[in-house]
Length: 410
Ligand SMILES: Nc1nc2c(c(=O)[nH]1)N[C@H]1C(S)=C(S)[C@@H](COP(=O)(O)O)O[C@H]1N2
Ligand SMILES: [Mo]
Image (cartoon, rainbow, N blue to C red):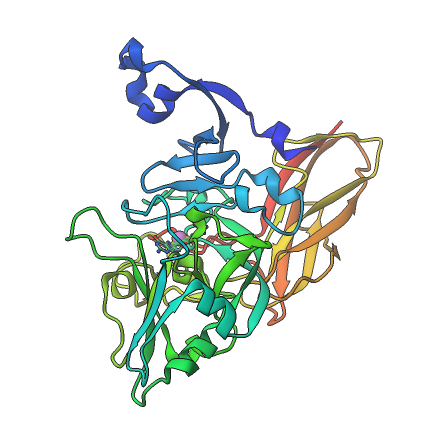
């Protein structure tokens, strides 16, 4: 019943992994390292497992530079918080500092403010009230590999997400210290990373002034009780609870209050979704009105059974998993063992806060040998439920559907 045993872990040749189909004709000298790999359940789903990144344990490798590292899914069965050394990693630009000196690092606050601030880490930690919040960090493209028809982009499985207890200070308090001037409309955030060539637009994201001052958006220095790992944004990153992680700017060293809406590439052109329910369109549709991606939607997953698991027909089972409500708490998780014909409420684990993962479990006693399609559906505190059919959009964003797996009772 264990996810790990179902992952078809196997030894493959690194040149095969790196070179894809070209590997068959690659030089013999390329065939040097054998590495473990996992096959995700979609086309071209072979992913090597790597332990070669600093402060990271075993991760699925999608790309080395800039790094895209996915959390192996069985990690989510181990607890409600995702360990720092297994937390997924995503960077857009290839020039990322290999180390950051916390003693000399500065966070600048400028733009439409009464007083510019130039803060060291010690200032941030000492001068503002410390706050803590559990929140899910999920890439907008999480689960993109499941899109049908397929779309371009990082072909993630379901592991481009994680839940952590973030420690830091309120962005509102920092902005208050700087004194936002009348007429300001947005706050924009930049980190230490940049493109290799000047023509690459720097990765910069903005939030409305009201959102930035909602008292929930944080500048974090702690993750699950430790400093942030370098690849997750050491020494400071933005936390935007309930919103997709494209806004959670890492290695944050620049906050600018602006008085006209941000038109930079990463706001105006990238991360646009159809302005439709579940950001869904049919693949034939064109000229759909788009908006910048924003709030997350509820999701739920199985963590101790997966598609194709064989289970003992003679025994009752506890099926379990994780859920989250998106921008709201989890109201209910429903479980079905008959392909959605009947549903029962799952038992929810302890509540770590409305933006956190929440564990769930349900009882399943197969009445006879055979195949069972198990489904799980999350409903959030606004009554928003996961859809029965998957959404689709050309960017491969916001994948959402009631999860279904088939197990064999024998
Ligand atoms: N400075 C910086 N911050 C960034 C990004 C980036 O490329 N540069 N990518 C964003 C995106 S799209 C994602 S999914 C998250 C990933 O966070 P993680 O690497 O800590 O998991 O970082 C966000 N913050
Ligand atoms: Mo992302």
